[in-house]
Amino acid sequence: MPNAVILDAATLGDDLSFAPLDALTTLTIHQLTAPAEIPARIADADIVICNKLRLCQTNLSGTHVKLICVTATGYDNIDIHYCRAHGIAVCNVRGYSTDSVAQLTVAMVLELTMKLSARHQFVQSGAYTASGVANQLTPPFHELCGKTWGILGAGNIGNKVATIAEAFGCNVLLSRRSGGVDLPSLLAQSDILTIHTPLTDETRGLLSRDRIAQMKPGAILVNVSRGAVTDEAALAAALERGHLGGLGVDVYSQEPFPEDHPFYPLRHHPNICLTPHMAWAAIEARQRCIDEIGENIRSFLSHQTRNRVEL
Image (tube, rainbow, N blue to C red; front, side):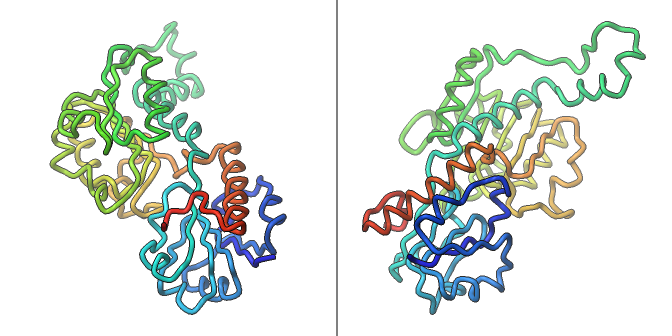
């Protein structure tokens, strides 16, 4: 059986079964791998399985790696041009996290709209009991019904979010490569804007400072795609000055983001919801991802091209 190595199993959690991979390969599992450790750990590998680590000429040169399996849909951490030129197959996993990411997207919109965590804290702290008032109506919240929900990137996840938004009674606008409304119209009209586009050369910095300024004042923005799709400093500034009514983010240009990141000083802001890149990570989605990696390996060993992204 081919030798396979998982470089960063800790990013997948410790509650999964790797049986689908054990059945097809001689598997070595590393919980975490520092960049400097990659060359030694893949030296004897035919198949490399990773989530976040950068694989490129620096660490692939001189190896006999034949297949890279990314435990994600996005593969911007893999040097596709190098792999294509050197006959290294690359597979991603598509659709495994659609329901999980859509669920967090909507949860963030509801949190930013209704301030549920603050209201829970009001009751939890005893302040509700001490108030002597039967309800708490500040800050006020709005119904989603009738609002315009813009979706930037209408693939599987964007389309799933659109279905949920329509169930709330929202007017849904879609902006995608294959059609839909143009980006200026999307920004100007959306009360809620959720981002679901992959990170590519075309989408890097897509939501720039100028484009953020074009957004409808008071709009809620949620990014569950990649941090670098947006100008993070501009988002922080727009929230601070009140141009954005709410900001939800699960993904960052550096993860975890450091103390000098523009979001760090805003982490207690009442109109922000920051989560640690976990939208994809429902347990069902994570196990589905491993199962799909197994199917990708099975396909490759059978000389098929399932989920190949370098072709």
